[in-house]
Image (cartoon, rainbow over all chains, first blue to last red; front, top):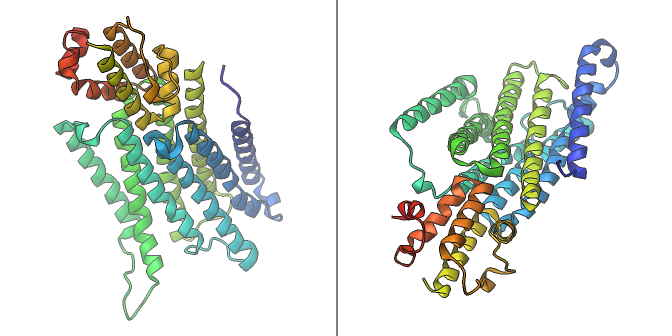
Length: 274
Length: 99
């Protein structure tokens, strides 16, 4: 029997509420359009990331926090989730204070972008927890497959977002920040999803024990984060993004998956203790 | 193998596991699963009649059971440094992994 945790209970309840709300808002959209329901939804679901952060932070302390490789990995992932919450809070402030909907790019993107290095460094630590990197032997076929996957992801990100990006010129200057984000987001996210796939390859047959399932959920959450960010950027560039749309729903799922994986890690810890 | 060498090996295995998964978890596994009681790594002492093969095998299996192959490999990496001490003590299965 899984030990009940109050924060995990709130995570599950909040997730269910946001799923139900999303379905209701979009099913009866003509009714809700007259209200602020779409905006409230879009500006509040970050609370799932906040709850996930608390679960991750508390869980990392079980593993010694920054004193162990695994503890650092979990802590950095939870900081990445917290950055997502801060990013959404910032976007929300922009809307309610300056009346700007989807203010991309803005200072909120500092927090959103910080998620990328947090996730990347965390994944490096997770991979390190599987053994010394130098001793992780890669077979030739594996290397070939990895190279093919890398090319696929980079090509996708490039043609979707980087190609056609306007480089700053004297004649048509665009802010450095805009240029940095338009290149940095897709390439940074590609990097962490590729590391996640590497972690998956290593952990599926190699990890075993109580932590295989939670690690697999983390990988799933990271892939979901990539899909959510990619879809958001696509809709934003196409000027078809809307509050409480499919983009927000994808983020709800990815935040929940990450928080849930922290919960599974903690449950694994409790099982060992029994 | 003398008791002192065995305790050194056990301490190093627990320390290396602590570096990966945290001291709390590493200690819990050693205490509960491998029946090695201690509060801090420096305090690890084993009874005089301890069977070295049993202790080492028990540690390896306990950590592997929790964390899988990575923890097993951590144990082997430690044992590689003490090959000459363990050669007549541990099983052939373990010896083959540390040669």
